[in-house]
Image (cartoon, rainbow, N blue to C red):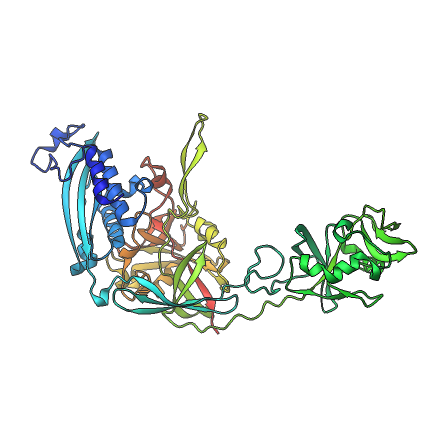
Length: 595
């Protein structure tokens, strides 16, 4: 629906844009309390209007925009709200949005502070509405951002792309469609992938995954699902696997002649097995010892069964040995019996030889400071920047964006206590830091441990120090490290491949803390939002005597400093999302090996 149609619809509900608030006209506030506002519309009407305008900027559906994003209760919340929506506004266009202040008057001063002459804004106090003892100030703001070459808010478009492979890096070349700046983003090797459990890489089709005795692979024969267990790690140059299930003789057209080399079973293993077997790569020809016959699968002999019997379990099956007009079989107990191949109900358990795995060698990469790489994380692609070439013998990469605290949260339809169904808020995996301030047992660590980025190095990240103090507000990276004090709390054993920075690491890399999206200038406004007013560090707040304080440190994007914050949401707002979600997100880091 375009803007005109939306506005017409809203006007039809009685909303009059530009209506003057009674308080602004000089009427004492006492006269407009308890619903006597003089306003022509309700707070709910303004919330709907605010959502409509918001959706034109963010692209969201109005119904999906939470009310809590629109209403602020302090100047800090006001600045985060204004900065967040301003960062999403496209340059060169005039945008309108609403900020509703609960007992606080909204303003757009943060726009001037962050954008300077590159933005113009307007702020109209459109209405004042009292609900009980709370006064809501309805502020309609306008914003237009301009770009100037050097400070261009880049719009990146791919100009060249070389996809990464399992072991080889890829390269993505991007150009800014506005100023022409270019950037090279490395896509690191992806690693091998085996989604179907057949030990063959889904990407490069090589048998690349470690296999040992008793390893199990999944396969199918003519559409019938089977599993195969390794019973010999070194058999005719490969690894010998035996099917765990029997295949009916009907699959072979019967058994045929009792002599294995003349049987229909052998002929199928020689001529048709490759076509019907799902594991094409890595399948080696196998030779039966008695006759020297070669095929792509075989039945075990009595001697082979006796050799591998301790590793074989499952149903009775036919072997390849015969005596007169009968074929030998083995039962579940390991006892041998002769069977008439034309009358038996037993089937065949095919044995195959697969090549020994070779994972290959990852392409060596030397990482330089400032280099960018795009990596998948939880199904999304994120940009990471190298901020240290020699961190624990590797290269330290820091995410170039903040993942907000409400990531993965949402409202789900559930059965309520009274038997009815309704939408209940389900917090995301790191809506709160955790029950306490020990990172080892935090929600953040638990979520990051479930993520995988290929070829990252495990590093020691135990929290050995707690901290006290805060850096000055507004100083950002220009603060003196002496404003924070470290207190030894003991050596904590914790290794991880994916983690968040500690306070001492934040001090070492402070020039990167407020820089995002590959830019060389501090630009926290690109990340700040209602649930990303900053991001967590893994260090607890406290001293040597008391460090289980319920506080951990954060990098504050709105106030521009480091300080401790409560690891649990404050609650008490009456809105499920706000009561279960902090305002701080996460900024993951990892270490890649250097060549």
